[in-house]
Amino acid sequence: MAKKSPVLKEVQMTAPEETVQTPEVPATPVVPKLIHNKKLAVVGEYGPESELTWFITQNPRQAGRATFDRFAKYLGAPTVSAYMAAGGTKGDLLWDLRSGYLSIQGVTLSGDPVIRMPKEKKVKAPKAPKVPKVVTETQTQADPSEEVKALEEATREETV
Image 1: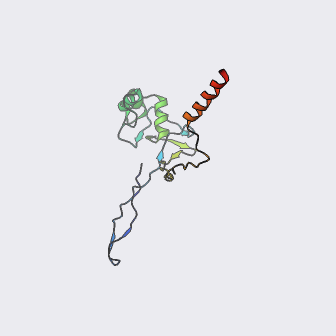
Image 2: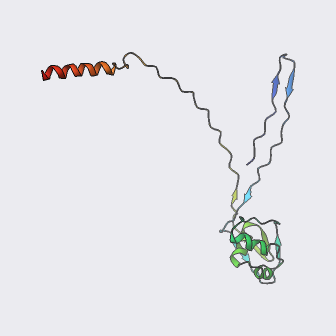
Image 3: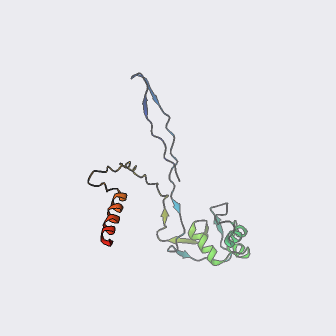
């Protein structure tokens, strides 16, 4: 997530003619991230000797998964046949193609790629401080001990 950079501010010191400017920190650019899209159609044909062009050098898969180990084996394969011989599958090849990890000679993708932008953090408005509740005379209740005494006296009179 990109952090918001501070804006150039003027801070007034004790004397009105003295101002200090804080340095502006350059913001990191928000880079859209291309994600896999099954709706991209593969246009063209490829065979075992079709050349692969890799756009990544590191394994993007999650460590500890079977796909991570498979991807590590076929990463950098020069042809489709070398890719398959290293343990890659046709599904892996199409997934990597649609994800933008590689390109296959003679094959293009058609359709609109899905672009996901990093979400911006929403700034919540500060909550108003709680105001203590003011108890008025009409809201005050009689002392429960007085009510209990009155009830006890009423029940004694009825039983005698």
